[in-house]
Image (tube, rainbow, N blue to C red):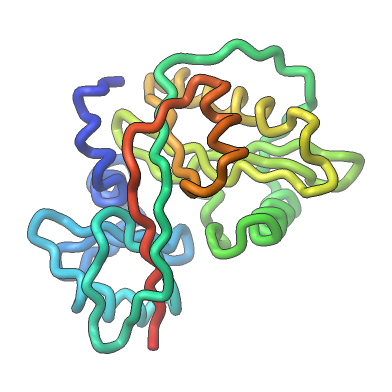
Length: 228
């Protein structure tokens, strides 16, 4: 892993789809997008033109996020919302003993439970096949999936931690820390650096990530674009 490639984090979707995730890429007018059944994210390339690209991609999905610099939309799309996230990095593993039973979410039943859990806590950020582009882990209470985390955007040197969610009734029990340990250790074992994106207003989550050793690299935009 190399932090000499930090510049790629300024345009993570473009570089993910140039590198590790190129099999999931669709390109329009110099912009790269994930195939929408896997992830509804796009990024502008060096010579990209976002207005026609947004219109073309909107024929495949009714809404999506452009990550990085704000896009110019076309006649068939409009900007619904502009979100700003802290882009955070973890430079080395953190010490934490795994005390919970953490399982890989692989079966059809588990994948459906993950999809429902993430859409309940963070609606709109997971698609039916998102689980296929990374590994996802969960904690159960009896037969109920109550917490999860996993991987989404992947580059040669970086992997994004995503879907760090816990049902409201089960929060403040350390489940997120346990799952973050499991997920980030896997990423480090692959000789990559864990990154994550968190809403700049989510003070509680940012404090947790900082406590575990994550540091904010920069602010980055997530622009929600929808078809009209």
